[in-house]
Image 1 (tube, rainbow, N blue to C red):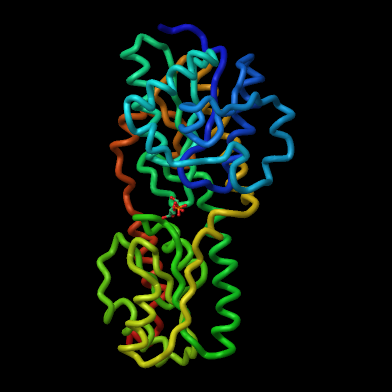
Image 2 (image 1 turned 90 degrees about the vertical axis):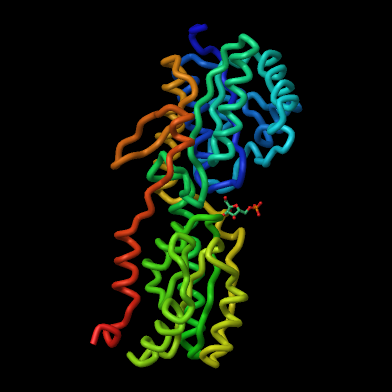
Length: 336
Ligand code: F6P
């Protein structure tokens, strides 16, 4: 069961994230360096079910490190959640002679990878899977950092800085909704970086009077004539929050839902560099005959860990950052 890995597949699955291409590039080039062939599986797990693949060479990933999106396309596969779909995927693995897979994506992608590897083992196949965390939500329990988060933060910051210019000119209140699924990392980091008046995140229970009305009042008392409210999509709808602000304070906020713009764009230095290292570590794990692993970062170090364990981990919420945000968003007058 422990033959050296000769040919691997690489795929991107779930929501795309800037830096996925850099990770694919690193997988392809590290594989080549290790004498391992690499096949690109297109459209996530669906590609494995439907034999949708492309041969990748070091030159076919040239000039991709700077590109957002994913050159392999991505999808969320319902078929793959069923044993029949995974059986079909295993047939494709056999057909292509794959003995390893690098799956780049979020926790849904890793759950799929683990289910596939278990089904492969039951069928007597030696298929090793390694996950690379990539999602703008930064919500993977085992890893401090996920590919795409930094770029998404910068995209949101850039948009909010622009909104601030016009809000300042018109002396308005802006309510901006950022992505993050059920997590508030994006809103928290962005809120700190733009100096928001108020930030709502799902990890903290929202008290509208305390968390918004009071903060706007205090900012107003301190002399501010424009206000920036950042709402994580998991904490509520910016449209509803805007209406509530109008009803309680009488000001007429402008609402912006940043949406999928946060998923695009050329990856930042941090995302290119992290993705390149994660791709390298993923192939090295396979080259060392390790399977069911996830690449993760912890205290600035990169490592691989057991996939099942990784999937059970809950990311500790950065409470200190929330306290800092609170300290910085409450205007001086509130402390008197
Ligand atoms: O997980 C990434 C993410 O962008 C979330 O922040 C968001 O909730 C979701 O995907 C949106 O998914 P879709 O692309 O299906 O609209």
